[in-house]
Image (cartoon, rainbow, N blue to C red; front, side, top):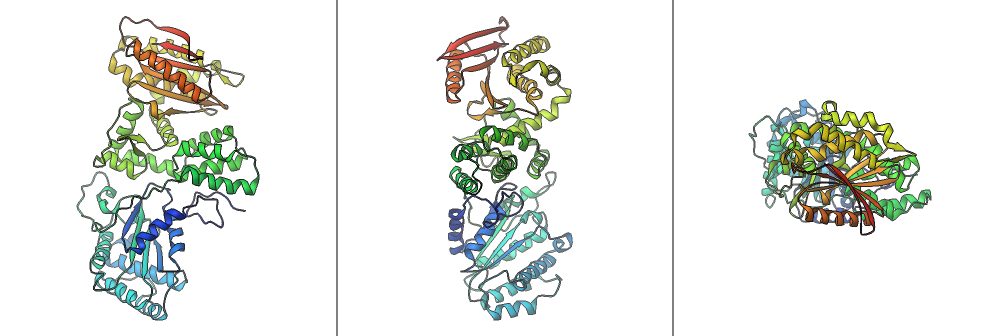
Length: 520
């Protein structure tokens, strides 16, 4: 029986997976054209699986060598000569273990004669000549796929290897060489300086400017996720609403392969393929200390400007025009932390955004009285498995005013008000519920918080007071948002820094929806 898989490559015979045959076909067209390229996407974004499926597709037309630099050690990376020898040895091992098709005896015999039994030292000049002779002897064109190139891209030896491949590409009309070379990793090898340690200056220019731009969308599509879950449902007969669950998976992950498949794994483990089971899976996933989240945290530590940009987007509601030349944005796009929508920077998906919120909460919660007060008051806010949102807002309003009344000005409220409420609600729902911020409504003036708690949703609009007319428009927008979520009651938390304002709670009906607004 197949299973879901998030470790290493996915194999169609063993794993439930999205059909990526159309993507593979488009990459094959690039191979057919003789392109050299680099597939650079975030961690656990389907690169290895894509290369594996591409090799399957190419095997009947090309001699395809699929290598990985993951296990290459310091000794092999020490110089260009040691790395060239290691690569040649790895190529020969693929031949010996019969992992390459479309080979002729003369080419196999030649490779066995020129390759030592263990990696030794080979000049890059000899390496280049060996590749040319091998490609000339073999009747079918040779394709080279190299995964996990980040393992080597901090080393000058790797730059030398790229230089050899570039030189042979530029002279391919005169001497045989690889038909196509595809490198896969997180970092863009054409701009290899990004892989150097943040505190170091870039000293080397990458020779990989021969690469054809690779703009393939490698996110899983909503249709593809549905196809994967249809196959699962045909095998297991769970009775799930495949369309509804696949839509939820896509809406929360935007097709990030690791996140989408991990959610399916968690629902498979629980046997609960309902909306409630899905929400439980999101809560479990966000509480995991998995490799993706560990790597994400490390990258934010390594690149503080990127961290600062994401923080300002989430808590200050700042909008950043998308500029691919901006270094924090370039990195964020490279890591699949951010994306571009309507010319503006957005967080790449809802799950990752919530994880970012949780990370920033962890940084500040121990020194934040708001967080601690919410944790202490938690038992009062839950009755019969439901949140008393009215009481939560009332208590928060009172606490907030007591703590910050004499500090109130526009900058304080815009930067701190909404963040403080998120700090307050987090320990109340922690362990049982979850939340996300609706990205379409998050800006300097308005943020909609959607709280999921034991299958029930609560929507709280947090906004800055900008006059009565703006407030009326906000009420209508919230009523429409409630209708879209099939809810009857919504909540508004308005931060008003007008010195003559008075704290109050207003209850009204708008478009048939009950709205409770707390003005601070």
